[in-house]
Structure formats: C-alpha cells, structure tokens
Amino acid sequence: GGATAYQCSLRQLAAAPAENCESALNFTSSTTGGYAIVQTSVISEGTAACYLRNSTGNSQWIQLNGTYRGSSNSALGFMSRVKYATTGEYFRVQVREEGSTVWQTVYSQRGTGNSGEAGFISRSVSLASMAGKYFQIRFLLDYNTGGGYYTDTSGATGWNVDAITFTNMPAGSWFGEGSLLKTEPRRYDVVALRASRAARIPRRTFARWYARYLDGGPEA
Image 1: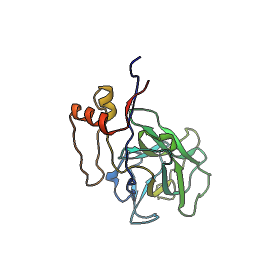
Image 2: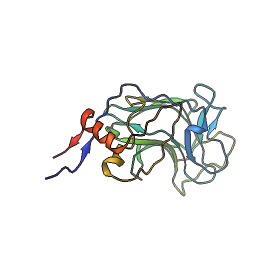
Image 3: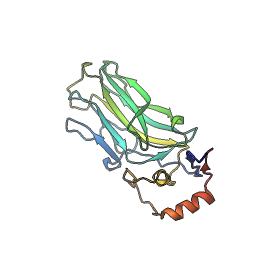
Image 4: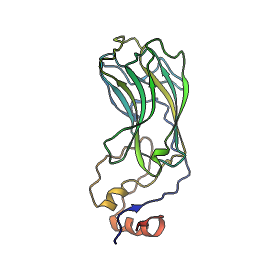
C-alpha cells in the first residue's frame, strides 16, 4: 500500500543553551497570588531564580518558551529547592509533545509538611521519552485540592528553580515540518529566546530538501 507515515532525522551536535532564570520574558506562566516568578532573594547562581508558590489553593506553573527536540539520551538538569510545602503539594517537571494537549510528568517531588530543604539540590531528569520528538517543558506546583496549603507570602514557602541545563538536546533545527507533511496550518507560535536566525521556506523547496538531504521517507 501507500505511505502511512514519515520520519525526519536531524543532525545537530550543539546543546541547547542553559536557562539561568534571570528574566521572566523567557517564560510563560499561570500563577495566582500576585507574586513575581523571577526573584532575587533565594538563588543558586547568577542574580535571580524562578519561583512558584501556592498561597491561594491553586496549582501554579511556569513554561520555558522554547521548543526542544529530544534524543534517546537527552536530559534536563536544574537546581531545586522546595521550602515549606504541605503533603498536598507536588513539584513536577512535565513535558508535552508538540501538537498534543497532554503533559507528561518526568519528575515529581512531594511536599513534606515542614520547612523542606535548607538549600538547593541538583536534580537530573531523563527525557528519553521525547526521543525524536519536538516538545515543551514546564515546572508545575501541583496542588491536590483539600490537601492544605500555606497562606504565607513572605517567600518562605514554595519552590525555587535555577540553573536549568540541557544535555544532548539540539540548539536549533527544523520546526514546522510536521505541519507541512500533514498539509495542515501550523498551530503554535515560534518564540525566539535570544538572537536567532530563522528562514521561511516554500513548501516545494522543503519537499525537495527533505527528499534529498534528510533521512526521511515513506514507511511501508
């Protein structure tokens, strides 16, 4: 029969640049309680760190604005400090494949009901489940309704995240080719986190390059 799917293999050796949590402009967020997601009072390195807290009984999250492409040995590293948190609060790292509405948890830590960690701890998370896929990353303070939460707003509660690093993940590559192959409109915006160069390629040109240069083709 005819082709039912296509694969696209990209070659890129450079790692995606680290995110040092110095600017809120590098993140999309959903928070309540009127606090800043980037603060300078509790940091691991540099001058600032990301911050999530639940003083209103609601889940909170920050999402990196980039779209990444994984490999079988991709990993995410970050410095983490969970402070006062109840056992009804979970601190998760999640990934979402481009085109999906489902967030997958790749790291989870439960609050202890006490003062938590005295300092930052280095965490490393495998992203092997995203091999060959484009995806987004977010940090979620997940509140289990009814589990209790601290109403304190002094900064003694919640989650500080800093020094986010990527291993075996490309800094740049194609994007949008899935929409071309499926002949459908692209459903997501592209956000440049730093000085970048981007080229918009006509469909016919992409089809020619895809057939000639990429390890792609119809699957039987």
